[in-house]
Image (cartoon, rainbow, N blue to C red; front, side):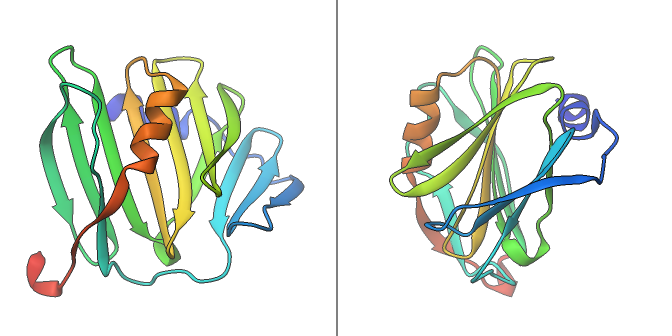
Length: 171
């Protein structure tokens, strides 16, 4: 799985010739569009540390938590089902998060999920779907290793809620 993530995230050499910038006036997501990739940034209120911990409260059927970690800038939860599909959920303090997405080997679309702009990436090389969005000063992403439909992704995004708070002693 780690190899798949690395291939998905780094399977391209970044062309730093900016084509255009797409800013959604309703949200704080800024997409810097290049010829071979998209970079996502947050504009406006950004979190420097994790205070509220978010989590997926309605997982697809059969998924169980396998790994969990949190620190002052990132929360991560890994899930797996009996078929071997894996689901990764991450929350970042937006100030420290950088996202570059390969658009040469991926299909992308932007969805509006209850007023939140969500950037969806489906790899053309492997069965990986990733979604990215910004809310409450944080950056969120879900990576799904396996086959999943858009409605299931939207249900998970809608179920992301505050599930706790972080303090330095939580490490």
